[in-house]
Image (cartoon, rainbow, N blue to C red; front, side, top):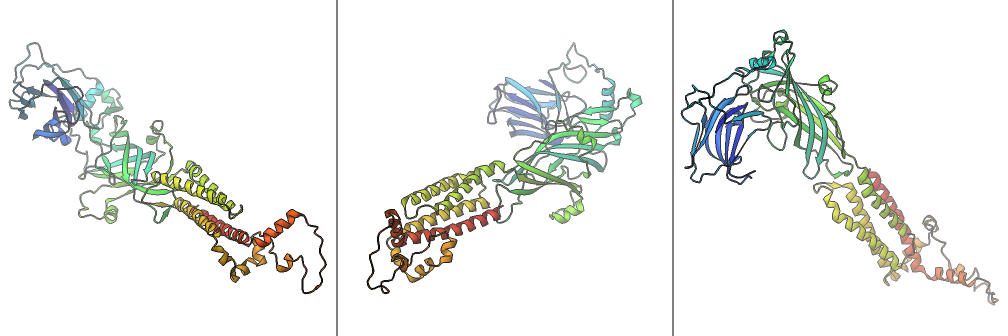
Length: 542
C-alpha cells in the first residue's frame, strides 16, 4: 500500500483482520510522527505492545503531503518506509502473521491529518514507475498560494519569538462539584489570541485577502494545561474552530474544554450541607516548559469574547458559581509554590478562583419538612394523655421513621464531613428515645417510692411552677374535707350531697392520682427543655 500523509504529527494507520477491533484484539498499528513528530512505531495491539520503533524527527509536514509505503508478505515480514527510499524505516518479522482485511486512518486529539492511499507513483523516484502516471502540480487559489507561502519551511512546534505575549480569555459555562471525591468539574470556553509578525502579509498583493484559516498543527499556537488537574495533558479542545489569522499577524483560536481539578477547601468542623459552599482554584499554565509566555487576560466584555456568546452560554444546574481571574508572574508563583526546581517554567499563570454554592431548595423540602414535623409531633406528645401505651407506640413510630431516614442518608452526604442537619436528626432521635425511657419508668411501680419523697412533693406543690407549666391547682387536705376541720366542730352536721357525680369522680381522681400528676409535671418540663433545645439547634444550623 502506498500512503500519503499531511499532518503536523501523529498519523496513525490501523491494519486489522476484523471489523472494529477492541483493545485486546491483535492488530498492526503504525504511528507515524508520534510524540510531537519525533518517532515512528509499529504496535501489535491498539495503543500498546510496541514491536519496532525508530526516531524520525520532522518526518511529517503540516503543509505538504509526504509519501510512505507499507509492505506485508505472507511470510510475516512487515516493512514501513518513505517513498523512494531503498531501506525501510521499520522492519519486523511476525511469526504469527495476521490476515489483513480492514484498514483505517486517524490522528491524535487536536491534530488534523490528511491521508491519501494507493495513488499511482510518478516515474523518476527511484522505484518502478507507473507507465501512465506523472506528477502534476495542483492549481492553487490565491488564498492557498498565500497559505503555502506562509507555511513553507515553518516549524509549527517552535514559537515565533523567544517571549510571546498571549491574550487568554476564559468563560466558565458550567461547574459541578463532587463532594464525595472533592473534585470540581468545570466546563469552559477558551479564546486565545496572539500576534505572529512573521505571518503578516500585505493584502494588496493577494487580492485584498484579509484573513486565513489554519488547522491545528499547521502553525504554532500556545498550549495550556491545568496545573492542579487530576490527570496530565493539554486542554482537550472540543468543538474547536479553525485558527483565524488576520493580515497583520494576529491569530485567534477558540475552543471548548472540560477540566477536572481537586478541591480540598473543605470547611473544618460541622458542615452546612445542603447549604454548603466551596472555594476552588484552577491554575492554568503553558504546557511547554521551555516557552516563555506572558498572559494578558481578556476582559469578558471584549469583542472577542462576545463573538462566541451564542454557543458558549452559561448552563445553570444545582450549583451557583462566582468566578474571579487573576494572573501571577513566575516570581510570585515560585514564592507561593516552592519546589526543588523553580527556574524551568518562567511563564505567567492564570488562576481562576471558583466559589460554588449549592442550590438547596429541593433539599430543604426533602430534609427539613420531615424534621420540623417530627419535632412538632414530639413536642405535642407531651400534652397528650400520660401513662398510656398510645404514647409509647407513637414515640416508637417516630424512632422508626428517623432510623429509616438515617439508613439511606449516607448515599447523599459525604462520609468525610458531618453535616449539622445530621446532628439535628440525631438529636431528635436521642430526645425521642429519652422520652420513651422516661414514660416507661413513670409507668413502673418503683416510681411510687420516688413520688412520695418530700423533695418531689415540695417541687410539685410550688404554685408558680404549676402556673408556668399550665398544671391544675394542687388539692390540700382542707380541700379534700370541703373546707371544714373536724377539730373545730365536734358535732358536725351531715352535709347534703349536692355535687354532680361526674364532678366528684373527677375531683377524687385528681386527689388520689398523684402518679398521673407527676407524669404531667414531667411532661411539661420535657416540653420546655425540648423546645429550647430544638430552637437553639435550628438557629445555630441556619
